[in-house]
Amino acid sequence: MDPASTTINVTETPKERKGKAPLLSAPPASSGIKQMFQKGPKTGYKRGLAVFDVVLRLAGIATALGATIAMGSTDQTLPFFTQFFQFKAEFDDLPAFTFFVIANAITAAYLALTIPISIVCIIRPHLVAPRILLIFLDTVMVALTTAAAGGAASIVYLAHNGNGDANWPAICQQFNDFCQKVSGAVVASFLTVVVLMVLVVLSAFAL
Image (cartoon, rainbow, N blue to C red; front, side, top):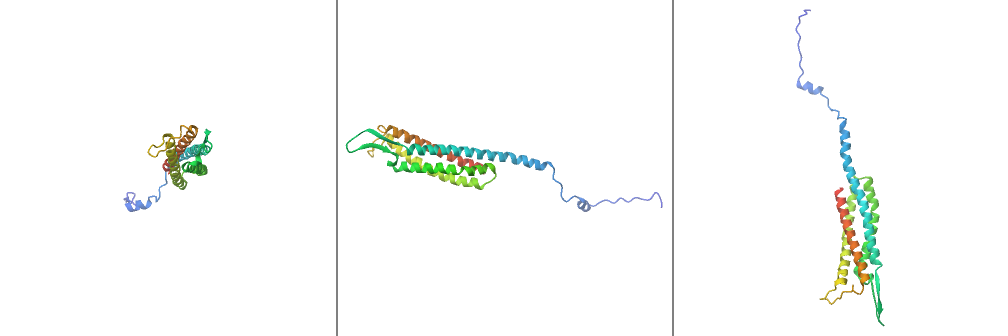
């Protein structure tokens, strides 16, 4: 053969190049690490909200239970009496105060029973169903506690100021200790309402 033979260069067509191209490219090794770091802060944020949720529930138990005990143990007997009358004031003389005691006792029991659900949210912060359940139940308890505190507050206002149009005299000048205790109970109940409202907002943010 002639050493000076011609050389033919064969060029690959675009289709052949596509056929030789790898079908799947291997993902970079750093992508999994990036995903882990992206999920980390969000998980810590939700877990922190769940911890704060537990703390607020404990505070709500204290305020609701304090309101219940303060109102339920309120009574005062004046040191003077007549042959037929003894001047005495008790919380169960008024239906609004009785409802107040029952509603705040229910609220305190509810907050205690929902602490395990909040602990589940700490352990598994990405769960959505427990938080939706807490939002619904907390909203119901906000309505109940607000109704009880508002009704009792109206009676306390009348006890302090009376109503001249209805000829209802103020009684707090005579039953001073009674009025102080029921006023403190109403304040504690409204603090419970604030705690419950913050709990609703926290659960909503954690979704």
